[in-house]
Length: 171
Image (cartoon, rainbow, N blue to C red; front, side, top):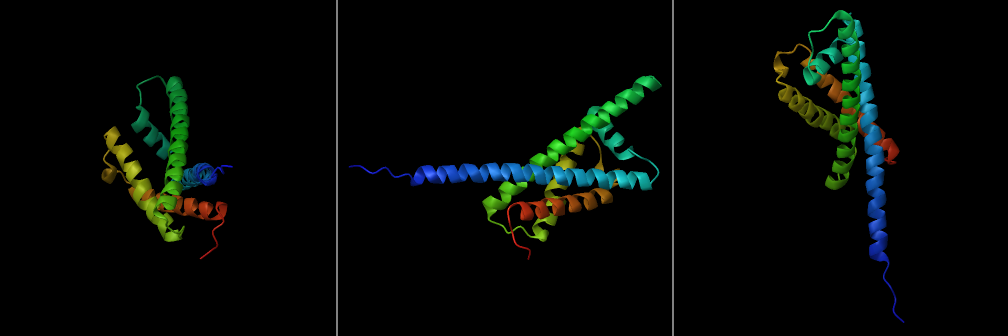
């Protein structure tokens, strides 16, 4: 009587489960980080008495502006900001999945330092690449130190969520 070895099948099922977990937890970590960054930027703009100035500036760089009448300009501006917000959240969901997969692949512990470095290096690099593609000089814009602080916070939010979601004890 032949005996079938199910160990390879079980390992494949475990791997799929881990991938799904990383996908789910990483996307949610990224969405939370993106949402935290939206709150950070909105608070900064409100305290500067220029609500929605940052998303208006960024969305005009990504999607372009237009010379239109005042009524059309307001609707176009609102739609542009809404589209940029969706793009922002989708990008952070992708960054969260990338972070979860990177942590598993590199077998790194989910420490606050790793999260901060990921936010400062990877999130800032993605933003800088996006600005470069739109032809914007990031160093000439006055808000770039706030960008670093926001990405610092985003990295913290991602790693804290991943620690909680995947059951890592505090260290």
